[in-house]
Length: 505
Image (cartoon, rainbow, N blue to C red):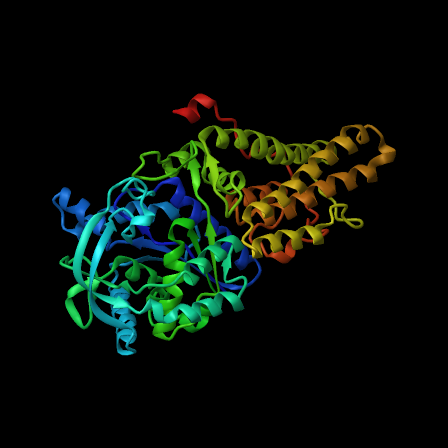
């Protein structure tokens, strides 16, 4: 069984912000989880480099667009590395393999008769890299970027999107889980049902982009160029291998709600026209908000995720973005919120649980964890299945809450069982052994379930308990997974205290 997950590819006209990190972290959690389940997995991310605004910023700095792109892409390649993302390929739309694939893809559609020459006249938002109607503007400005769109009139090549209206409606009617959450599918279907207009697949008068193969005086419209990356990467990501047959039918796209129409309407139509299967699923998430406003370079309220990692570490940042906001909905992010969850949930709930468990094993049993005696009290099989069910539905926040319910149960068990009292009575030795084993065993299952979210922390938990850390297979989440071991010592704090003044700085 295969699992293929993609992030959108990101514009390189500026440096990354926490909103970009959000999607990358979510995709990585899914990729890591499906590898745990033994599925062949491919995780793609990358950069969209042929945007008009890239050419404009490069010109302002006196650089050729490719020189500017080569300089800026380093920031974007650093993002998944610093986020500890386990991506299999980082695509750039300036890759020769991608450009060649785009031309072949468009040529197929052209030869099928679904691309024709025409003249476009209308409004264009450079921030969105998209054409706008008057109805989409607010006080004459783009609602996303707050800028007035430019009037463009030029000869273009158009894709017959209107010819695919009925096929797209049938797709949405037949596959209820094609787009999730359901209210986003309804939004896309309503747009389709309202009538589809043909759209431009080319731009004239600018050299920056992939040349149209039958008319090199024009370049491919940046959104068409960008969408094709999800297929093109499979054709050249590995030397000498074509991965399309292996992965394409199982692709899941993670996207933000601002690019829903391109992905949920335009993209499946383009694929059908080129003779490809449509994606397996698309999941549309909401925005991370800052002070109730979308985090955006143009608005100027960005948070640099690498700055947050420097203060808190990568695992707490990964945890926070998926814990604080229900994945799929809009939600508010703040430094104060990150700091509060770092102290309360990571430090107190999880960190103290490990510290107390290892300290008690070291003190009362000289660091020895005995083998299991009977069934765990934690209903681990049900826990494993519930976490997996949430993740299968892209409910990354719900899966994390299920894990945290077990963390809280173990903490409550420490208080109700009072091992420090049991240790005073030699006649209750077996009872103490059982309590200490149950705590360690529960922590092992928690660590494995948390590994997609907190990959470094999960390994530290297992190491502190003297448990195998090289095997994170999902099937290890079971009663009695902790093995007998010796040499357990009080664990160092998983999440050392950070002063609020340090975080604010």
